[in-house]
Structure formats: C-alpha cells, structure tokens
Image 1: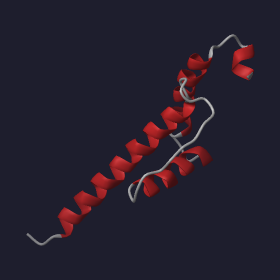
Image 2 (image 1 turned 60 degrees about the horizontal axis):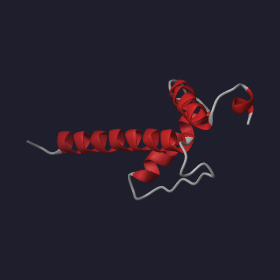
Image 3 (image 1 turned 90 degrees about the horizontal axis):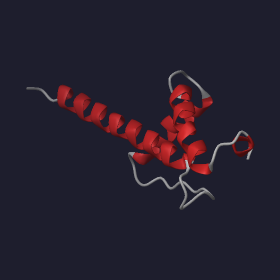
Length: 88
C-alpha cells in the first residue's frame, strides 16, 4: 500500500523488490539468512511460498528465484566437494 501511495502499480512494486532483495542478500542480513535457510531446505525437497498477490506479479517470485539460485549453488558445491574427495 505504501508503494501504491508513491504512485507505483502492483507489478512495479514487485519489480522494485527484486532490487531490494538483491541488496539485502549482498551482506549478512536476516533476509539473506532466511533465503539461505530456505535454499538448504530446497535441496531436500520442494519449498512452497504463498502470497496473496497471485496471479499478479509478486515479490515472492523474486524470493523463489533467489532460493532456487542459492539451492543450485549448494548442490553444485556439494557435487564438487564429493568429486574432490574421491581418490583418483
């Protein structure tokens, strides 16, 4: 609602959140720690996010993308570590 008062439409506010989330994930913030916790869970199975915005553009789409991106990185790091640990 606050962004709407600034003249931003719903989709614009969701797009703006992408920049906010990226900035929050650059350093050790509560938001980054939450995304990393969810990413670790996502490597074990599906993580479901819910928001009232659906089906309109939503900030949760950006959170989901961040979670999946970090989860992919975790999986790749684990695979690299496992390969390095195998005697060759």
